[in-house]
Amino acid sequence: MFTDLTKHLLRSAFVVLPALAMLTSCGPERMIGDYYVKNTPKGAILLVRPEFIYKNNQMAFDLSDQMSEAEKDSVSFYRSSYLQYVSDSVFLDQYMNNFIDHMLSAGFDVYAREYQDSFMKVDPPAFIVDVAQLQLEESRDSAGSESLYNSGTESSIYPTGLS
Image (cartoon, rainbow, N blue to C red; front, side, top):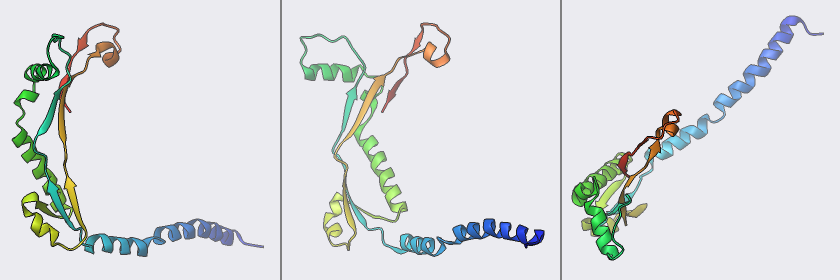
């Protein structure tokens, strides 16, 4: 009934036509979506920064039971390897400047708290980003070489880091 050439063309059409339909089916929707994302104003952000950074030393120390919690916190802070040397203002300035740069590159207008009056006059969409708390923690984790190298020895390494 069908020649070999006709059968081959029909098989090819059943493979090629659905593939073509799948490739072009989302074209107009994608173009509309791209246009919307590129041409819709992103809005404004009022950025509220924290006053200070919470710093917590998670490393275990043998501290006297007669010390108050505040004294224990102070001792662990001054026994830290890194935390005691981190300046709140430098860290916050760097963190907030990077955040502002990312928001500006995404198309947002960013206002500091000092310019709150100007922010209140902008057209929507407008957002308030309140970075209420930043916390740095210093900890020490032990990892036996057995788990690292599967060698069966008992030695341990103690990486120290901030998170």
